[in-house]
Length: 392
Image (cartoon, rainbow, N blue to C red; front, side):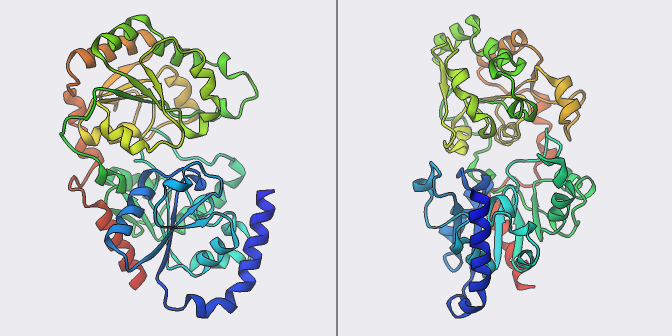
């Protein structure tokens, strides 16, 4: 039903467009969004809030779903994703800024509709990405759309990167234009401290999603993914240490796997496991956590930036390499603490806690690979880059 409604709204906005010139004339409109209008987080959030504070001369709108749980958390001006106004403002915008794609975050399906997709060429298109390129090779959720998505990536005017490593992937693996990839840093890193002690001794656990589980008709509780996570979180020795040291593990289920969160909750025995809501401001949890546990999430790169310990619990590494693969060699280029089963993960996490959250040398040495800048001026550089493209 949504697709039909979106199509009707974009067609109506298309016919309204010629008669709306007076309404939009000389307005400096920028649209921004992320996570398909559902979540207020990541690079888009921090760049949006920077713009609200520092550049009031820009008329900027956050694009959001009408039924989003975080609707009231979003400050400033909002547009309902897929509405007539959304498309009309898109057709009259000077810049669109997104973390996933214009179709997902800004103007649903418009890029794929002949004639109507002529508006895709009009604004400056800014791809902020939603995490540093690292442990997940890019591929479309549906292989039928690969060419369409490849063409979309090549059409972006600006794609932000944090390092030469990231730019190299975008240009040589994704076939993006070298001129479009700008090493300016991630907007969300402006919110992160470096070399400061965390607010708490709590540990953030962020396993990433698996498409072969999400789209499988089998029972989630029968999967190795579920069993390995539960073996780790319910380990008696680990929970005794957490209790003794007054430390919590905060568990954030990836938003694309959140439908299975109740299966995890219902089987937890430890009292020190706290479950974070899908709509939580993840950046705040990252900032105040003392360490990160993950498998292949780019959240680990945020902890690398902050110089805080990371435990990689990669219980399905062979399957992951086969089905997803990584831009970082998972066999030879890893850093931090590594575990491949629940016993190893428990012991290495206890080591991190007992060593007062000290960072391993091999992790410290990796920072220069991923970050050109460490000055909390990434948003400023992104803005300057957009402005220069608009002025051209």
